[in-house]
Image 1 (cartoon, rainbow, N blue to C red):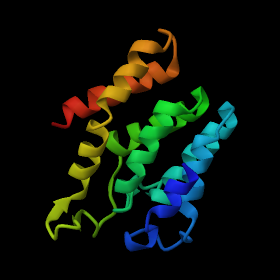
Image 2: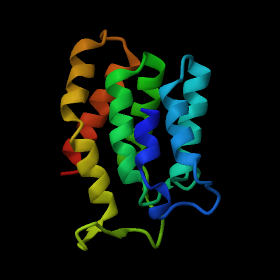
Image 3: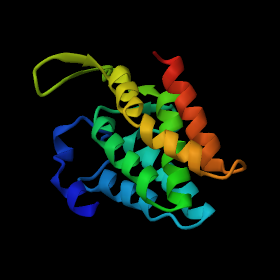
Length: 158
């Protein structure tokens, strides 16, 4: 995953002024490597702060390429990492919104797109992964509950 993170041109996306060039890759790695509740909570906060303003509930356009990495974490990493990634995704889709002034982005094709819709589409593409988590996790699993919540949010946002 680290090699793939290095291939993304993170600087080509609008992002918070406080971010450094490796803030988002480091936040994603923190989520992927979470191995306890404390590490997962810290990684969750680090990820949302890297994506925008965690306290205001906003994100910047470079949230879009992070979605594929968060999906990969949900599909391939351990339970604490999976829960942290699902928590981030639930917030991004359910409660957060684009940072004011960044509601619209110009894609590689030159088309202007609604950033919130791009986030919804990105999460919607994870439906098979979410289905696996919902079907395979024990009934009392937090990851199962988060995957079900995220699925509900995708359906509601259509």
